Image (cartoon, rainbow, N blue to C red; front, side):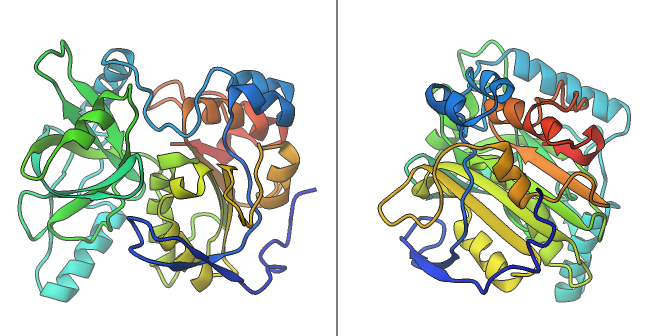
Length: 374
């Protein structure tokens, strides 16, 4: 049965040391937690998943956030989606709650209201200069782009993303990819992106080849799920790989607000321990809010001494950690590679169409209205 008292029954947090990584800059404390697997390797998926989930997983690779397809269908979707949003006035402007909060923070600190760099609508693409690149691990980098003015904030609300555009000299069409910045919405003068490189990913490959001083085009905000203070009593976040970035945007917003009472359960899957992104930040949140935030990790390739679980997801494991379907005022968020999305919740039809709920969450009894697909 579903765990109704996961937070009440939480034991004092036991910490272990993680190795040094590019993000945390040194050893850090981590909560020892039970881990869940969220990788659907085709050769192994059938051994641990229900048949319907396994079949959905067999044609997907694990933990990719970029399809790797050459400019074409995805580009068309984002172009069409962007045009539709702009035409319908769907973009959020500086009056959005998160933007107002960010501007208020800046005004309190400086005495002046901050201007948003991205205002949506007919603004078009904005060219930003790459200021710094940090190696995070073997295939992930953190990119800092300068906003047009040093006193500007991004203008992003919660939850939203930005669209990047690049057209190579030999490309027939431009490549468009959305990313969720990991920098705070109140940060002045810059945005940070966390990007994993895939050999067949045109945008991630371009970004990883960039050096400080070069420029990239951005547009936004791209509205996702509109968050408000205490909108839900309990939310579940299911992420794979760099699918953690929109989840981190939600986490950062919730736990930076002293009026928030929302409880959060995170299920985060990766290939290896080294691939766990933002682990320092997540560990700090878990240690600071042990009665409201619980994180469950998995690695497919476990190192010696790994304290968590390895393997692949089962419905029983999901029932153990997620708020149950019949609970009042809950919401589940899913973000990861197409295989994860298809196996857990079903993929979106388009940026504006969530599609039907299928996969493991449907089989567990959740309703379409209880799940949001990033």
